[in-house]
Each structure stands twice: as structure tokens, then as C-alpha cells.
Length: 78
Image (cartoon, rainbow, N blue to C red; front, side, top):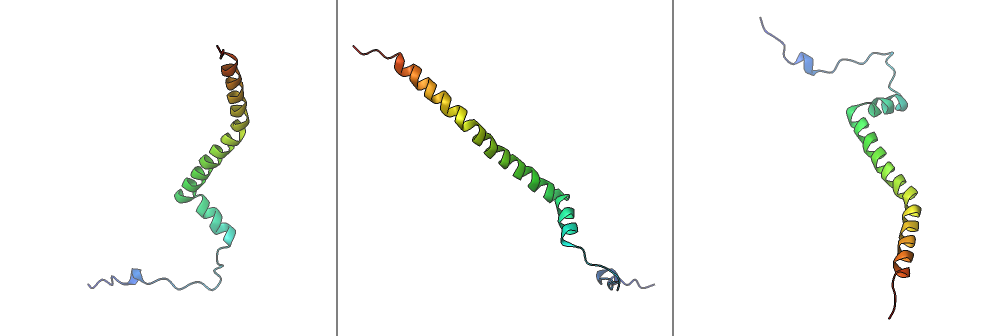
């Protein structure tokens, strides 16, 4: 009995009432795929790093200024 091995390689004919996917549906589907989740995690980590630097730069500047004042106040000239 011969087996037709090429029948599964041919794409099925599209149905007449088949609606194409909307952009938003495709986008949501991509976001919840593995690649989409990896991209979201990487973007979240990078954004968190920038936010941390933004929030801490003022406090770090204050600490440096206070430390330099203490350092120079302890210096005695002969």
C-alpha cells in the first residue's frame, strides 16, 4: 500500500470566513511567549538600574560632600 508522504507538506486551503489576526492580538501573543517574557524581564532590570541611579545620586552626592568636609576639618597645618 503506497503512502503519500508529501500530503502533510502542503498548506491547507484558507477558509473563506477566516479573519486575519489583529495586531493587538498578535502583540499580546508575542508578549506571553518565552521570547517576549525574556525581553520584558531584561527591560525591567535595565529600567530598575536606571531608576536606582536616579534616586540614589542625590544622596550619594550629599555623602561625598559631608565626607570631604570632615576630612578637611581634621587636617592641621603646621
